[in-house]
Image (cartoon, rainbow, N blue to C red; front, side, top):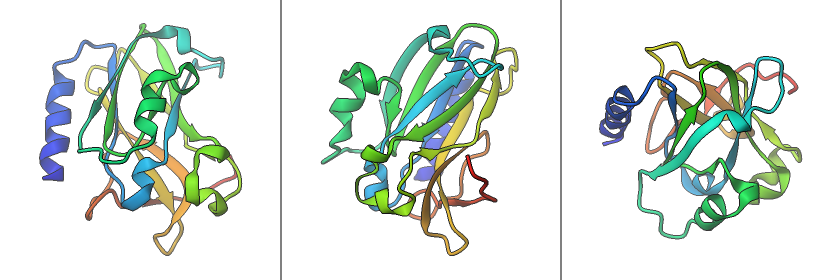
Length: 176
């Protein structure tokens, strides 16, 4: 079922214009689905490039029963570019190279705040709108060596592993 969803996202992405990017955050386990992450788009020098976004829309890929973040993510200007587990963000960009990352402010981590006590950050993914074969990237939570969430995000062009939700990735962590 999850593989079918990923294939549908990839198929849909093949039909997009060259400057469009799909940012897919597959479903996680439990309450981690409700922890929002916000998109950060910068140019190659690290300057904010939010004004280079030409379109922004969302698709939800699971039935959201009690998602407290859905209204906040879609309605409030501060939360523009916010998404949760099971969501795909459709991002149109002007031609160029961008650094795409996500983060979760400390006050939005719900019960997971105790993991780090700091904002959660992801790695930066370089996206070039001229690169014709890449139109989908994935966001997944990170984990410690034991496989438990450790308060971070990973952005990659490779889909994360699944087992009843996204398996958190175990990556060599550096101080962000």
